[in-house]
Length: 169
Ligand SMILES: [Zn+2]
Ligand SMILES: [Zn+2]
Image (cartoon, rainbow, N blue to C red; front, side, top):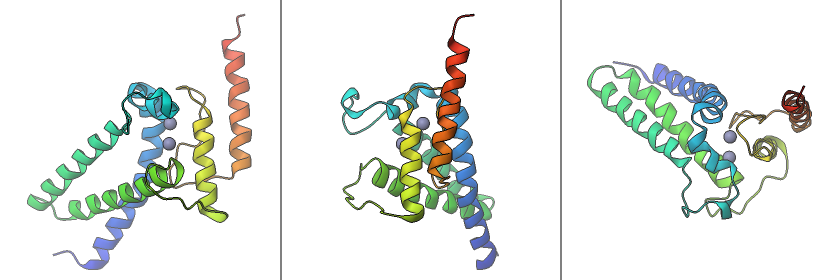
């Protein structure tokens, strides 16, 4: 029998761990070998021919299936796994509200943050989207919002570096 305290610890740890996982997945999978799906998310909407959905949404489908599997396995064999799966689900809900809702306006939410952390969050992700190619993007987190000036500086440095790489010798 797990008490509520450890359940809560697991839920919060899984929630925070998901941001770390999402950062790596976004940088190394989505902007790596998984670019084929993620590309759609870096194109503007009129270039997208498949309506409301983007190919990128397949990631949500895959991750959801994994979490459903975790709930099932946890229920049968190891209850703490259900707490972990709950933390991941919570992250998914928050991600969907902020990333899809607030930044990309896929939900009918008109409100835009005017200051503080949430404004930084929106700006940081907008900067991620200024790069429309697989390489050279910055700001891969979804809840971690670094200083916008720092991000812009890093973006410039990376673009300068990639120009050097591309130039013929
Ligand atoms: Zn991206
Ligand atoms: Zn986005």
